[in-house]
Length: 253
Image 1 (tube, rainbow, N blue to C red):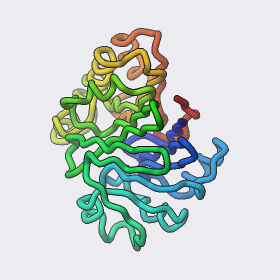
Image 2 (image 1 turned 30 degrees about the vertical axis):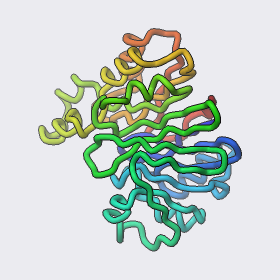
Image 3 (image 1 turned 135 degrees about the vertical axis):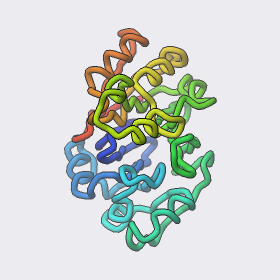
């Protein structure tokens, strides 16, 4: 099983996953041209993907879902509530499949577990992809360290984990008070410290790598995110950050 982050951040999110002959895209927050080019740089053809799965309707995860659907002939999977809120913004969609948070989606020999999150939009989900005994998590827009998140982490072989902000940078940064409260509130995002504590407390020996995702442009830096995680987790675990501007490496479990 491999994963390639095509972009991760509030400016747009999109991930490619390949397992058991199945090729899936998660979220569509970048342009079709960017997606084509970035996957081609990693030796993949986006037109061979089997489906697009949307985590929630915020624009940085969904804005190009209609373009991906029409340009690449991809069926789109999303919750009915997300579809209703996006209606009219994505253009004509002719092949849409609805799921409920908590459902498992089956693609060949691959299962996609949809994990309900307390992010501040109705029916937001994260994902755990299963291929046989292997499990890979795409865990962003988590709200807060909710019940069951640690247990879920303990069963993963690889994870893209939200590490959105540094608390001090957020406190002293340029955002208005209401936005700061939203980010650090129960429906916002995980901080570096919250993500690092989760890993320190729950990561098992089976976890091969961590890719820190959805880093804030104004309230975090890759160096600070990595340093925070090293402080809590140590140096034995492979940890990297995902870019807001380009494709990441091929990550394998």
